[in-house]
Length: 451
Image (tube, rainbow, N blue to C red; front, top):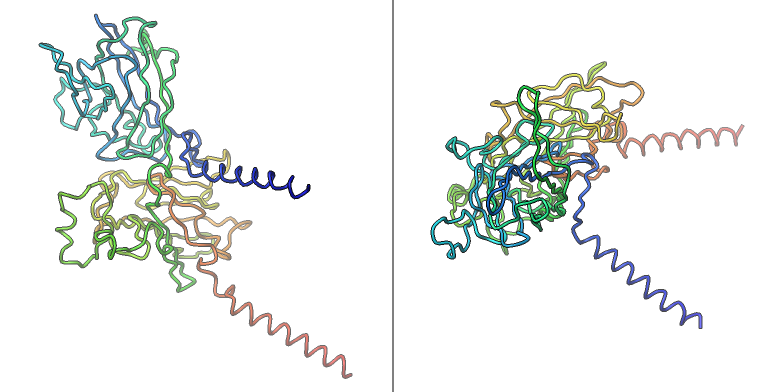
């Protein structure tokens, strides 16, 4: 009887474990980043005026993420209309496809698709086609890096829609590509109408209706393989700890030709400029780690009251310049960062008063553009830390970062047991000390046994 009872229990436990495993592999719509717990992109849809068959709205994207930005070719926003709405006209943006507008004889709409996708206009667009915060080519900077350029807007004239607050239907199934997958958007929610203050601050107006959509990012949804890795070195150890092998993939030119290219290949230019290749797909230099980006942390100098670190970011991607790149690193000594050379710095405090997280990015017109793989495909800086006597040590890898992000993606770190160790902490020296200790005690035991 006991065996019969335990069999169903084992079956239930197995099923429960299977459900947990499957759910862990399924992307979550609510992505949580412990270093940026409130980070998201909020889409605000403000209905500004009514028209004979619909309304005119201003749609804005606010990038509230501290260190994750959207770079060229930019964002693409999509949704599904709740009824049979059309887009009569747009300013500051455009639908990527017009769709079937054959039933309209004269006044042809801008877009008749049930599920339109909208992109930003390019810089240099004529002024009569612009509105405020438009025409950046879809580029949105991170909020901590450049809040003035972390907002994008476009105006849309919607027809065949409701003309009152009760008859307008909110669009459904919002999607945000930046430029590829990674963002998951929740449902649109009606909120209090947005208020607008006049330039002199003496009058306010408000939208007729406003709804918000919140989109969160998941590196798992964006791509299953990492995009960066970390290597380590120090002045006190000749060992250079490279990125873990196959951090972002493995070389497989036998079964997947073109997965990487040698830096000295005579065919490099033709491969990079191949028009049949997807320009968003990275073409990396053949390395043991196969990552587009490598971050190297070198413990450079030890002073009496200070210590210095050199950071080098290297681009191994032949197809992409990283404009307005940024780096986030965690280390307990960032609380005592004294000087940083040739990078911008901002302290991030995800844990309140604990200041152990730093955001670094390039100086405008100097090194804010990380060039493609090659001689110029790197940026570097040095950081000077003041020692905190109660915590400072070079032992057990304390001088190396706990976590590193590049452009918002978590980088693969080497295993802790591979970190460069102090010479007097090496296993061989520990063993020699132990042998000496045992020998001394053995000699004392012999002397005591033979007085």
